[in-house]
Image (cartoon, rainbow, N blue to C red):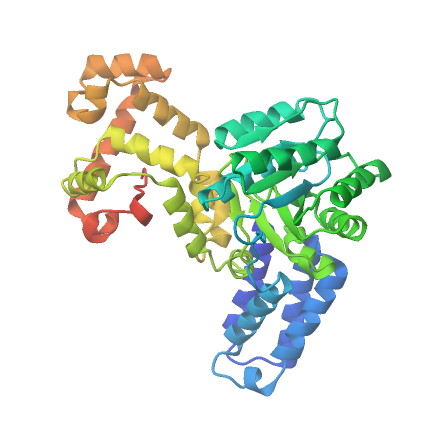
Length: 451
């Protein structure tokens, strides 16, 4: 998970600061030396780290901080504020043209960064905001690029414009805008071709599109897992074609996070979105303050709540019915399946807990505790039940459990153990309804957790 190692190291530094009643100048410098090492190991740009540490030190070594009631906490607050400033302070949006004018967005990036998928993700985001986007397939070189865009566009229920792979990308872009004008689209997103590395042909093509088409926003997709290389790529693209914003893809991977902390400082261009998974819904708006909270182990509850609201769809009547059953301990296997589905849509248990304050240092333990194979077996057991059995667990006699075990491909003992644990959970819910989310028996925004 992104930033996990960096978060752990910073948490250790902060723990030492909090343990001291008073701080000396040497204490602060020693702590900042550890912060510097942690940032460099996270692949943050060296010049960025140097300036960041200098800024924190200038603010932290002062009489107001050193003589305060809680100097350690004050230093941590300064680190948080400087980290937010480093990533841009403000949240930036894609700038749209006023009124009914068409906004043309050109997507660019190296091959393998996830540009085509990100293009469809952004289209989905804009559609949710009431826009009518049109995706234009301008990558005529990579095999299956057009087909990939069409498939993703269909999933997002967004129109895709294509002229095949024998046309000039400039002509495709022009024709796409003309098509948008005739068909009531107010956003055109150009999915351009990438290369394995920056070369003259790619840059010339992008420059030609921008010179012959009125491009209002140029967005660069960079792979966060490439660390400082992502920042170098962003700088080169900006110098040669000019970019308005950056989208960091693959932020859910085993990345050190350096790109997120370096892009704005090095290029002056804001990060607009971060890709947090392969699903088309896995795109988050970039909030510098929330990202700083995640990095420093302070959590990101606001993003968690928004994620729940986006992914949880349950009508009011169903919600009240579920709440009443949970209070009575009648939570059934159908409810359990629904909870697992919601959890998966949000990126899994580890992803959710990673947004909770103070969970940074625990994530390593959580990852080892969560057995994805076990969760899959549990789901297989429930899916091997009949609808009646799921709704009424009391029907599960010996012969039914035997049939379920065969259907799920597990031993009878596994089914017995799961059913027993489930019954114990029901009793707990009945005894402690307050744990299930207060008066209405809800979790975050209506989501019920399968544990």
